[in-house]
Length: 391
Image (cartoon, rainbow, N blue to C red):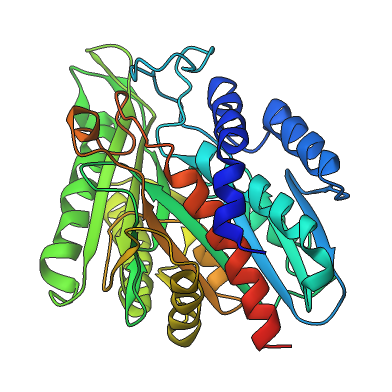
């Protein structure tokens, strides 16, 4: 089977799937409408889907080696101003990162592979994942056995990219870190409340929080290796309710992102030490809660080159590769890549006109649906060829 030609024939079906998921967007771990739709479609194609934690999985093939194909399904808690006729019905829910495409393309890939199941020389496992935006989904599905029974040997995922780019571009990194780690943290500061007129008999948690924030910035300026990409951002600071009352507590929330494992280990450890010691210095205490813990996304070099070769065999018009891409954004597929050899690539889904002005996570972003046939066919092609050459 020529997967690209068949994906072209099924393009309108893939687009219909994408638009349904977009219009009925959901956020977080629990995606009841999206899951029900994915399960129904997989059953329609002759597969037997089942729950895996909060996600959905299915397999097809005939034993042997196993390749995992992954798509995330969750949206963002933000308004939609795309102007699309199929904009989300819910207020402040928006597929502004393109996960609706990922789920739709994987559904079509499952259909293609089911139609060609007799030719498969191994097993394909599908992973429809929630909560990538909160970095919970991969962890949840790993804990519920997505990499076992059958045991996964390699994994592949694509991510669509909007912007001013023509269709047909794929972006990858087979030599270094593709995406940064993400360690979200919450610092709970305990002081001693009191009257704003008598700060000397109180312990001001706001003052402690300010000093913690300043001290954390010095970790980037004076302790991280300037050759590494390191970011530490505090994006939330909450405390108090009345101008003349010193509160008992304050809370900081932030994120650490790095492109090196050793930089991540240093900054996470020092963030905890600095927060606790600074709080003690000013008479209070600090408790640290880790909200997310995802390593840098590093793709397997040889496997990436192998998958690119299979993509080129499809002879997709205009298919062009851009190597050595790196990003300070993060992706919880890194938890999969940490455990099995994996490949992650971007596929351009942009426009060379006004529609390409906006990036992902912008309320006005629009994605080019011509990418659907490329993503679906590449998923099926890479799975089939890898199983054939690695049986």
